[in-house]
Length: 229
Image 1 (cartoon, helix red, strand yellow):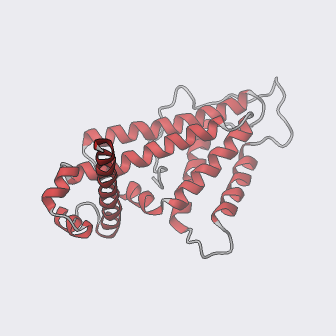
Image 2: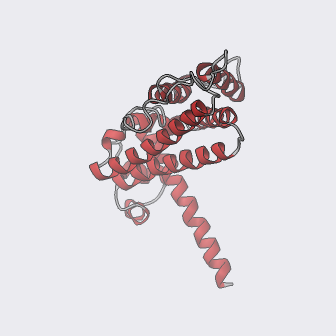
């Protein structure tokens, strides 16, 4: 009986947290982080402001929670995509597919991540930027792997990674679901474009295999790519 009560209480708590997050996303998108008040958020969730502070100590904690959950989801999805293929090209296809579909499914989070990074405290911003850099490094490592395996021909790994991420994240800006292509068809078109971008149509020989520049010496770019940041 006690276990059931604990489980029920945990489910209620999880439900309240998700409602707070959903309403915070809507308010931050509509009014901006600084334009949305805790009182408005509490009213939207239909709880007292004091109750909201029980779940999140401050509005800054809510914003950071939204960023961190997004980045953790992206990093987890990227890891799964990388593990799903045997070749570098198969892995890249899975990565692009995941990245595009994630940004289609989380367009509001993408907007906030692009517009409100500056609203994070310095410490919280560093933590999020570190995770963004890790995401980019994982893609750069995959591209370099493909170059060394002779599957890709890339003159500048760092720039190519930025280009891929920016392009694929951009679907969050324009996709509506009412156009001629479904989200999955858009993702497959993007997969095709990215593969064409990195694949050497003539085949690279061992002696002419390009060097994967930008993997070690360059610092990860502070680019707006996750999401649409």
